[in-house]
Amino acid sequence: MSQSIIKAICAAAVLLAASIVGAFAQEKPDRTVLPIQEPKRPTYSELDARNAKAPPRFEVKAPEKAPNIVIELI
Picture 1 (spheres, helix red, strand yellow):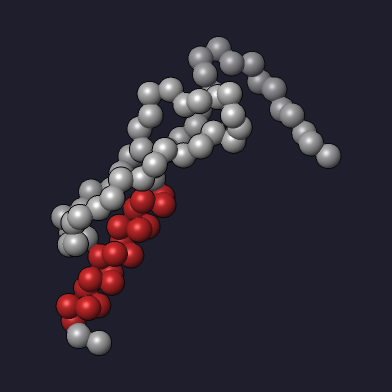
Picture 2: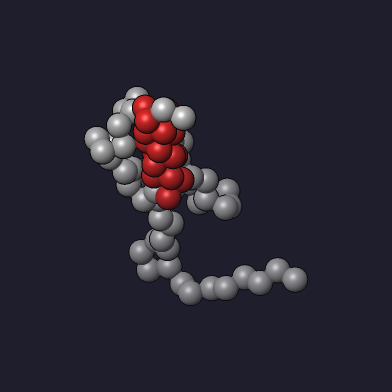
């Protein structure tokens, strides 16, 4: 394969990995439906992985003053 094709494949792999690892900032997640859905990923137009920025991580945290409850389904 030529160098340009390999570089393009590597850049696409880096962008895909960055979109899978992180997710995107959300004001308040919808807690009425579980599991909490990950926000939609933006499309990338940058082809050079050196210029691409990783998206922010998607983390689900308990609300302020939430009780510690574990539900076990058997």
